[in-house]
Image (cartoon, rainbow, N blue to C red; front, side):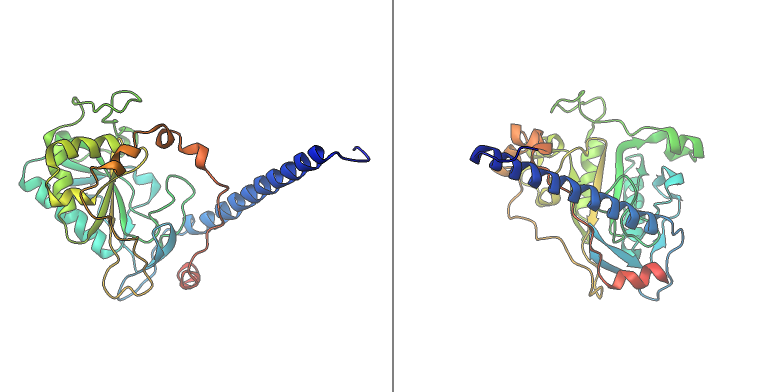
Length: 293
């Protein structure tokens, strides 16, 4: 090591130390998060509670008294059974069942349900940062007429892929994978009073803005990265769940203006440039009892 530094050397050394510190803090945060996720992922049964309680935020929380969604129901079938992420708040279970009933009533096919949450919520080892309070569910855009007439096998549920509704890696909608039935399903879902918002790929939001801009339900459809093969439904905090924290209120308007235009900018297409070192997950203190019960 040099015995002395010029001013420029000193600045570079300080920058290097800061970068190393950030890098190490990021690695430490990832390790802590992984350890925490292992604890929550290892639990296969929910806690018993007379009244289910969603606790904390969608990205840092848990659930007491979760219920499991039956893997087969009217108008839906659950995929990826090996993940064991079929648990949620009773409000979420009822919303999915109501959605399946309505989809069947309108002859739209069968919904293929992806992840809900873990038995007691909390962080997962892979797949999601949210889905922690039993109020989130992923639903494939693929509407299976095949599944509507028969039960899918375990193998089919594990190996079927959710096809993207985009052409390649572009911002163009693939109309061989997208139909008016998809629009109708999103509309039905958004009109459920317990649904707070629905995340979709920005291209899908743009498509809806072209044809349904005056529809009030469009406000709940929110653009987000990826989400080109499924939509993510998020419920608002249930009544009497005092430890549950809702997301910030939706902006006014239908979201078809400059806010949507940003999603097609170069800045939005390269979100990795804005990434910061991951933070250690801080769960509410009430989750300690949920984990240990």
